[in-house]
Amino acid sequence: MYTITKQDIKEAREQCKSAMTVKGQIVGYCIAHGGKDIENRNRKIKNGWYALHVGGSKKTDYPILSTMLESFDSSKMPPTSSIIGVFKIEGQSIDSRWFMGPSGNKITKYIHFDEPITGLPGHQSVTYCLETIDRKLIKKHGSIEKTVREQVMERL
Image (cartoon, rainbow, N blue to C red; front, side, top):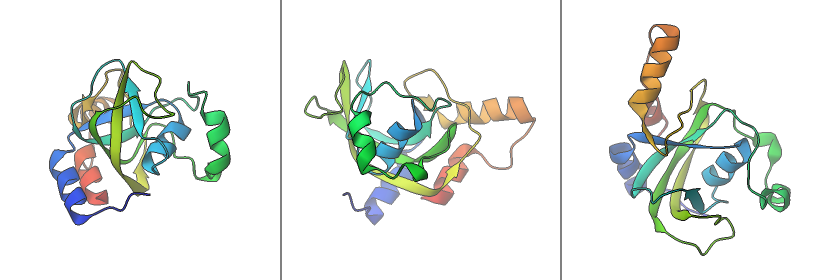
């Protein structure tokens, strides 16, 4: 298991300006708790820290999860449409039981939030700016008390 350092928190605060949506609560849970070390995408993801956004779907496409569920506490599944933490991508790898291709982006660090940021719409791109979520929320609600980035920084 990974130990969070003060340097990790400092880097995450400086670098985390974008989010990545994952499909399925269990996938988000596995990343946030260190069980998933690869994020499969169609292309290489730029190295750095990203907010971990769990999309609106409860289902996932990972066949490995049928056996993985035994080792995770399913009562602690994160809510859908929420940011549940941050994680760091550092390079690519195919050396993982999670690799499904075409590009396996290596997850090296993760910080789970005790309190998720809920009610956040997802986005179909690989990564997207946290300001994009703010614009969607403002369009839907007329205004917001705090930006998503401000809420992420409060939790780090």
